[in-house]
Image (cartoon, rainbow, N blue to C red; front, side):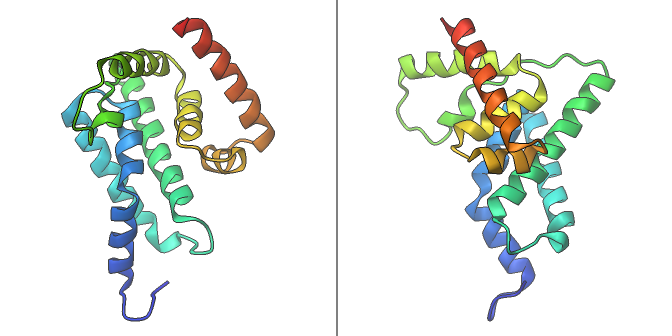
Length: 167
């Protein structure tokens, strides 16, 4: 996996920096508390590092990164349910972290979207997150482990649910 003059560790670090938004978005979609979000982010990065030797460089790095990050997030959600803690809706800050000006109308719409997303089951939340990130049906299916045809069906159902709840 090494490029000319670049170590495997340097390549991993560069790819993580280039695609850091993926980890932030996934963590924000599944955890509200900033300390818990930081812990989940660290878990994702540790799992990415542990899985790095098995990364197939012929596949898109972002797809692989999403898959690992979502698997860690879903494991976290299962652990939370096992511990009988109550999940709370995430905040809208994951899309607005870099924003310098606050658009209150846009923020209110994002808050409503995130509250609705928080009520989705973890798999549908992952599908929606990837869809909003403009991933193809094929790529979404590959990341979450369902058939491409099922992705379209899930997206249609999620859209219908969003329209009903946000109307």
